[in-house]
Length: 127
Ligand code: SF4
Ligand code: SF4
Image (cartoon, rainbow, N blue to C red; front, top):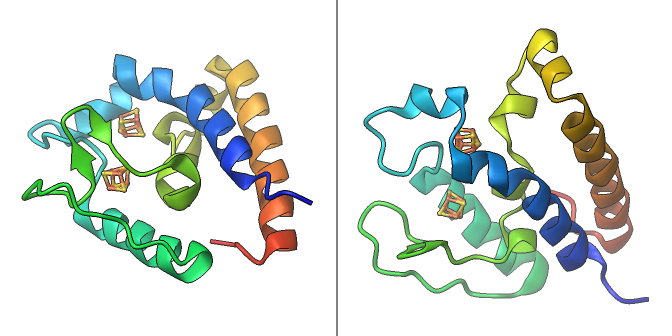
């Protein structure tokens, strides 16, 4: 059976990335941070995950702040940076009132997330 994780992570990235691209109220928390919620420590977690689970050595872009930030955003495939891919602050951090404003997206998010967790468990590729 083929590993479905690249497809599943790409799907959830497609669901969440428009929110990040458009910028949300939560992004305002990172005013003064060029890359908003991206941090070097998450790049390093991605580096370790890619090596441990896929034996892939991620190549640095040369960005002095974030090893994997390229000119047009992160260069790492969604399934190799699962913590980043699964994060969408309006769902991950939101209180219930906020979640309700995005009910459809929230439901779709958790459905996809459950699929990912089940597939990852089967493949020994848990976060
Ligand atoms: S996860 Fe939240 S803070 Fe980070 S870019 Fe997306 S909307 Fe902004
Ligand atoms: S999304 Fe990419 S650049 Fe941002 S923290 Fe994750 S690995 Fe680093």
